[in-house]
Image (cartoon, rainbow over all chains, first blue to last red; front, side):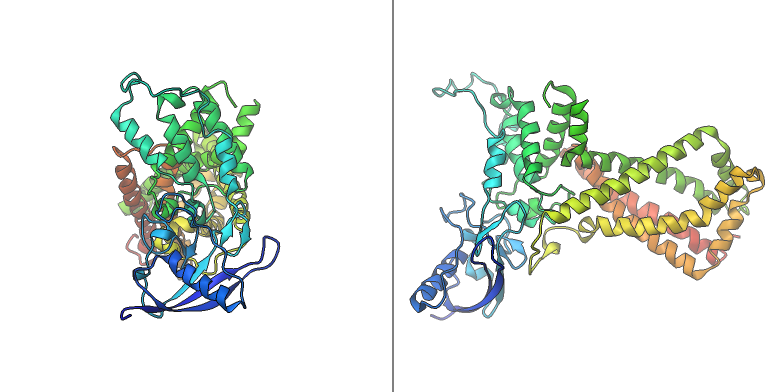
Length: 255
Length: 224
């Protein structure tokens, strides 16, 4: 078909967490500009399986509609590739040119060890959530709509923070692989609502302690996370996390 | 007191120390720059020397000097420890890394800029602080002519170049550091954050410019 492209890929191949990896060249021909980036990988994997010489490339993916946060590819030096506010599955080949060379790497962080090829183990995020990113009350049936008054602005900010899909692009983008944007979103979404109030202090103290224990770096406010976040989580959440943490440490009975 | 050591050993607590000491060092810069600007009165250093003598003999300033050095050392040592820890957080580096796509180069180079500043500071202190300190100790401070020292140091074009590189590093370090300190303190709101950011940029450029003018004006004898 006219308009189709040839793409030169350099993909990180690594057998398992213990082995050394390296970038391997692949040429993918006749790529439709309407394919998603993951579909191009499907086409390549199909070929690799049929050829039988090389194992297919392992990569994480699930919903393919930009909401699950699985597709963690570091493309040409940026998490999720060149576009703003999208995940890899929502990145289409029309964002590239014919004969482009594209380097694809896994998220790089001590806290996200490589499982195989482009797939990394992001359960550090799960452990951070398990340390406090929840509310313990039984929610029961849906309440009367206005029985718990919440200012519109707080609800909006909470929803905006709750848009975080836990993909880890913030960690991948940060020069210190800091998880502050992720943790700040998870702390903010509950700190802004009355339902989150009873555990507000313990939550932030425990989640920060778990974040540090997982080996993420610290935040130096470069803003790379905000710029690369597919859900455009704002840096104001990091400031809120800082406030919540100091407040909980200095003025609550926790910690 | 377990909670307080826990707080200051956490990544957030360490950053809090960076922010507080950083802002404290900025207040020192304002005093330093204002006093030094007295040379622009072009009165042969009379007012400037009077200011320098006040700073060298006032007992309150002597105490603040100690606090200043503690603040500086805390800022440097904490930065070093944080950087070492951050370097451990990504053992395998990216083959392709496009940092400029998502952040300013100077925000990613605070360690390098800070190291340059520290080297500059050692040279700067050896030029002026040591002489003043010696005069304080041997009781000749009242006849100590700092203005003459300035003249001598800035006769050398190499020294002028070192000072220019020093203030350029300072300017970029402040451009990120100023607004970053407020973010770390948790001060971020759409009502005033745009002001903090633009004020920080103007302040950084202005203070570096004034500092840069001092060696230039002295070297080219614009100030007699």
